[in-house]
Image (cartoon, rainbow, N blue to C red; front, side, top):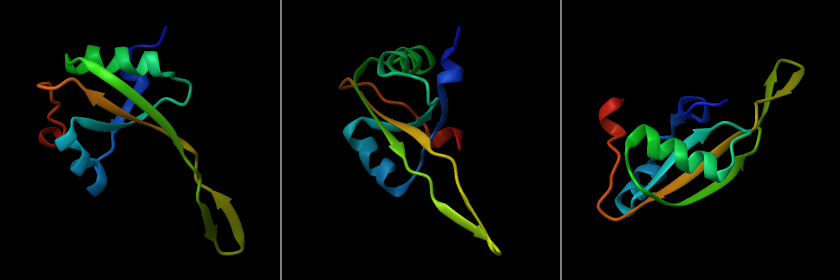
Length: 95
């Protein structure tokens, strides 16, 4: 059985994601096998907040070169979690 910490890998802190925090939207890198219901329960369990909506998307792999060898980075799954009004997560304090 997967725990909440197996589903939520890490928060994604970029310029766009910090702007969305004012709208109660938080971005996390999640397990590729996790679905929206599991992500919702994991965020609610870890941060003790109420989740209204979960949007998931795949970040595509990028081509990387090392001399003549061409490789790719791994695809990653990302989730944008919308919280109920009045709830918040203090991600920037833990960095």
